[in-house]
Image: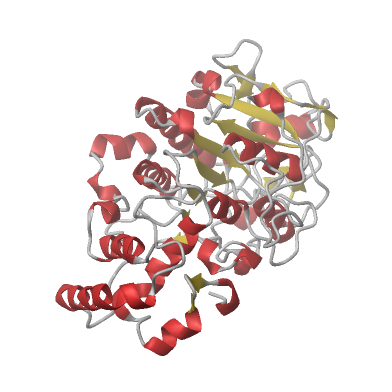
Length: 460
């Protein structure tokens, strides 16, 4: 954490270090919890968000915006199917989501002008068309303005980006210029590190080697003795409650159990799909239910039978590694869309059945779409990058189900009406989470705002 940005009452981080108390009981974790909560109101349970990245860019023509009457070089092999909403049709590989169309909205007019993965991903993360390299992500802004009050981190990131398309780590593993207090807890450092892998275990809260539970308890007692003199702030609060939350996580309490997806019945795990995407979404639901404010999930669908690992970029379907975009390999829609259909539909129903959908925003989007024209590579066919027109799905948190916003031309190549910029998309998400987009996030309270975009009021 930047020294000039973190104050504990009237005591700077440097003075805490000088006092020799930082290593006690993982104090940095309690500082993190305190910094998060101190920046937001202490209210009833607030809205939360599961933000799913279809990393690489989903083909809009084969999913949310099919064009069956287009020429053969653009339309692809999949036919549109009816949904629960009259007149709304989606690609045939999403039958379960088709049945749930009255639970979500689709934007068919997302647009920007950058066909480069890492830049487009930074734009999506920051909700800006021209973000600075240290621009805070949507999740960091949310957890600054609406931090969790549970004994858990406010912001968790499931499945780290990987491959050549990923944005710089600093754009999503830190809080940008907001500081590390608003960085996510990252779980899933490589393709095998996810709850879809046998033996998976979250290691983020493991004690340092040699620190037993008895030693933690002793350090906790010592902190209880020195806390009133060192950590009290002008408002009379102290770090004790944040230290309690940190201790809960370090000692395996009920809060820590939220990360243990293996506690779910086999029937529930099967419903989501026994793959990285499905199990990460199930873990996301557990975390939201426990009180995490925002969970980012990279939609890595795992490997199809017989595949060897090449990349986490499931949705970047150029015909990579000889996998046809319409094939059944790891990088083909025949594998990825059914995995997505199963996992996301299970998540929506699970949230609804648990009474959480009304207060949980679910976002499903990639950094851009794919070209209408199907390209023929040396070993496989694919669709290339296309930011001019693509689609996004939103559900929960006041989103009006069954809504289709915007439209594209006859080949889903360009926006026909109601163009949505990255700023507008971000403003709409903030609004869904009861955060006015114009809320100031800079130290002066007004120079920099959460978003400069226009809220799509028709979605609510």
